[in-house]
Length: 250
Image (cartoon, rainbow, N blue to C red):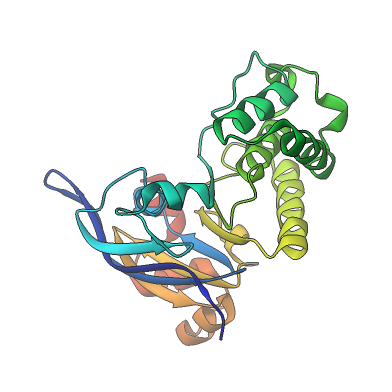
């Protein structure tokens, strides 16, 4: 039986009178590539922030990597990596300095941090840029460094919140090829949020989120078959009555 990496029941969040997330029931298996697909404002980032202990839920419960996100928030954080929509790198530090600073925050001893940083720089194609300031990197390279930093402490679950927003198509493809290789090698659980249909297609399973509510859940093939359509964008239309593209622009 496959173990569960993320388990949420009735998980919800209100901001005053605004309900950002209703009552979400969700299970993500270990080593699964799980996609949360929906337009801007659907509640995707709120979901990630709740699961990553950055927000406290208004209602419901969640466990990530075996730990309650409210009662065991520090233990949860030690077992997850998080890549935000916007980079949080220090642009004036070098590539290596950003990683060494993160290693200190994780209390990684030098004998562990040094080899781990070397390994990640090689995996992400950044070895030759290790002494370059982050501000000199392309957008794709900065994003790769964001993800490398999120993997530095070898988390069990990696949250990627709209990781390719603002990247050109070539950089997006390169980034996804890299993530797929890392998953194959490590068995990492990856939780992706996106409004790009093509990014959700390779996921093991996809949850369609709209206006803070779960509209559909299953493998991409199951969702398309159940809706009688040929694309996940059409699944969204069938489940919500609204085109994903129009919703994203709204």
